[in-house]
Amino acid sequence: MEENEKITKIKKSCSVGKKISAVFSILAIVGCVCALVASIAIFSMGKKFDEEVQKGIEKGIVNEDDEFGSVKLFDFNVKKIEKIKTDVPALQEVLDSQPYSITYGFYCLVISIACAGTAVLLKLVSGAFELIIKENTPFTDKVIKRVLIVMIVISAILLLTTSTGFGILGGITTWVVYTIMDYGKTLQIQSDETL
Image (cartoon, rainbow, N blue to C red; front, side, top):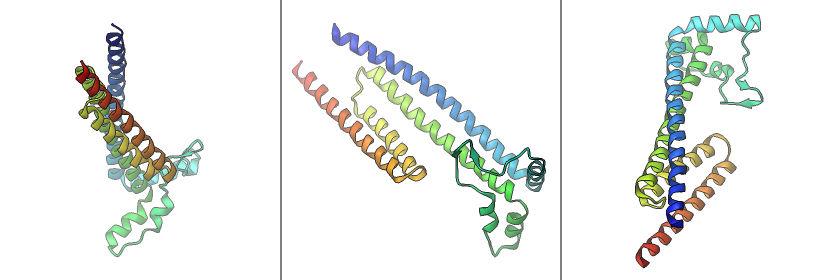
């Protein structure tokens, strides 16, 4: 009887996790679409966008910093775009005349790609919860594989965006979670064989 209560609790937790990951997945998809539309709009405005940003800077409404509070989201800077030189005259003219639209259009495009990746990862997590609910166990090969993929991708993202230390910590955490889940699978197989 106690075993059934544990399974019921696991199913409830997984059901809540599945719903939460589905909600965040939808939010990530909405963020992806909004950022993509913003990127297209900024690129299509071109010089007009740059003129409006310059007016905002002169009035003190717009700040050129790419910081939000004390956190720097990405290291995009208009001054870096201005340093890019090319032998193609038409491209060089665009780089020189529209640095804000190129910088922030690209910035929105990167955010769109990040949101799309997040939505895919959340869909994998939601699928793992669904498998646990259907198969009455968290230790199937499919669940372990999905969790492992999500954790490896998150570790790689940490390695590439934050620091090597966080990437290594994510990798170690991935290995520990995999080892625990593999051990759980082995115990489950032994338990099934004894029954």
